Length: 494
Image (cartoon, rainbow, N blue to C red; front, side, top):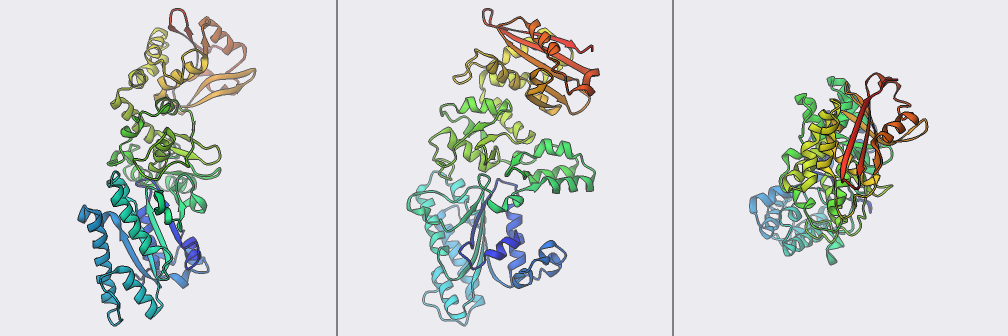
């Protein structure tokens, strides 16, 4: 990342805004850049044994720049008022600049831009701006458009087309705000979870980095991946949530570390928004499906929603959804985030969806115990009659089954339409540990025996040879007349 910022200093690419979710290392990166560039630091020992020291521009920029490092959240926390916050930034920087450049002539010592211009005109010295939490105004004053407008004016006046700026690196959760004429901060090259650009490797921990950490600290990579991976930024690169990886390795406990510290981005608020199809798509996501979205209408704030696509785009920026640039689809990335969705749905009392999530543990136990009546009962409790998922075919039944068995993801890799010797198995549950493998065949308004017969006749267990000693064949059907689910379970006998 430093190699990239070195290349763009004093070019038309010198404005960079990186937006990532909370706890994804934004402030750490900002502090690293300050340590590397600032004349006020002596960082040779910190960087000299790292790969950056092997690059051509390393020595040229190491501790050679005037750096202005601003954490906007700190200034806002001191003032609780946007106008006062801007004034505090203005006064604080002027105070430091006048101490450092006390012998120069100044046209107006009360205006920051004037002072910076005077320093540049008399010394030809430029500044690197590192601005952390740039978007705190849009998160904490989400309804105050006038304050947001005033803040954008301040940033634009301070940074855009100014000769004293050699590099500006901003971090936040949200990309640059789209708002009328104030989209004039378009000088920034935006890096985000929607479009990570060429910095995709630095948006989180890569699989290679996590594998190395797991080997070093003797931690299961497979479990860590299940909990914290899933942000597929390119075809080759998927990143892990950094804070969660560090916390789980340090404590040696796999748990919800990232979303447990959530404060202002309340997931429940967004998934309860009443846009057409939003609830149905949340159900699809909880069922393990992917949903296509359109991201271009999103206004890069937390209130200007016109469609479910805008809500989902925000959830990508917040880290609750992962986005695939190639397919334009979102999914719930990992177990850590699934737990947050499930808790939010439970708290929102989404009728049978909530019932299905609550009963999922008991459904699994009933399946393992070959209790066909209980399995049918819990699926009965889960079936979905929503506007989009009309309950009239095997596809809708598949969503019901996927949602009802959501807790099975702790124990299984679930594959839908798995190619077998003679056709495709509806759902195959491949165990991660010592649980039985399961093949589920779904039927609509047919005898349940036909499902089991089809599993055997088409040899859906092809490719599962190592699980044959502990394999369950499961048929589930829905009878349209009685409106009942029927289940049949057999152990594979060979």
